[in-house]
Image (cartoon, rainbow, N blue to C red; front, top):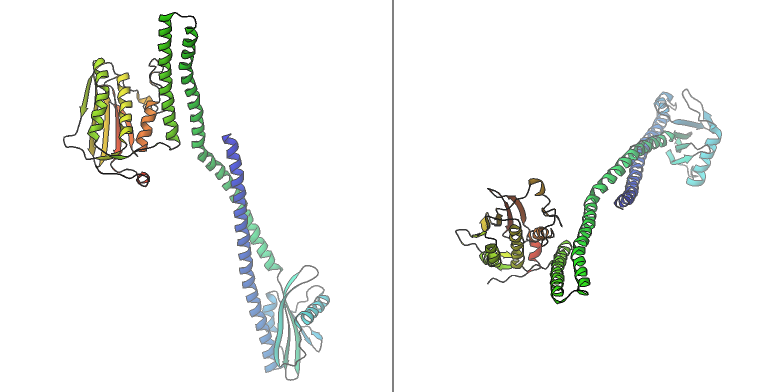
Length: 443
């Protein structure tokens, strides 16, 4: 499913990349065309004006055309046709383009019909029109049809500049840019596939975790349910004494199932960010004392020492969810009781650099280094035999969610001399996102 999603997203992303790069390519080609055309036609306009100036000055000064001056423009590709009394003047270096008679006739006709040139009004000096012309064979020209009049001398001119080279240059630029864009598109598509794959890793991991979570929850729920069904079945054929035993067993398993469902609901709310946090100013010492009183008798029954440590100076009031912090400490002490057979359990709190610390240290069996990173996983238990039926491996997961809700951090280390120490760090400032939703009253 994830791989299919990755492929679909890659296809959509690739289509988007192709559209964007194609648009950029089109814009680039359009801009290049405009820039090249503007530069090319500016040059052509300047050259044509210079040609007319040369012809006019020759007529004005000596009535003789200096064809040598025109040769440099002919070398640049211009075809210059000069007519006197409708007769074409041939000169050294003059260029005749293809079937020139038909081409010239069509250009003259275009100038006359489209631009009304030459005008019937007699004007002394230089007059001409310029336009782009496409010949029947597909050739393109920048064309000028003009007339030069001086005294009794009159010359008609047609100047052609083939623009096929300009079009070829634009085509070469477009092809080069397209050749660059194609591998760029391929690289971006491959990169998008890899990038999308990495983006989907958390989703895939979450999906796997959910699947494992559902499987583990189903397994844990099935066990007490099986015992309950067996006890109810046994009630049908048991006497009064046995019936009481089977009823107690069924009730005990119902309570276990209720605790498990409660833990599952807590984790589900945490996952959906639906936990209702009641932040308020509270005394940390009061939380520890309440927690101590909760476990005092249980610790004494196991013949363990239970110590509570406060800092020398009284702690200020902190913004906490008192009930959640109490729940967190109860989970940690309950774990410590389950895995500590002798020695002591120490509950402590202190402040350092505006950070509030809690710690729960025991002298129990400890946690191997390779398992320290996995103990907060759901349904994970150090007791792989599941001999402790009161622990489902959800307690530390809930503890971590409580710490996260306080924008804190929890870590596990070895207790000097043996055992395990859990340390919780909570910043003294409540997260900003919660400040918007909660109002506090200072007692």
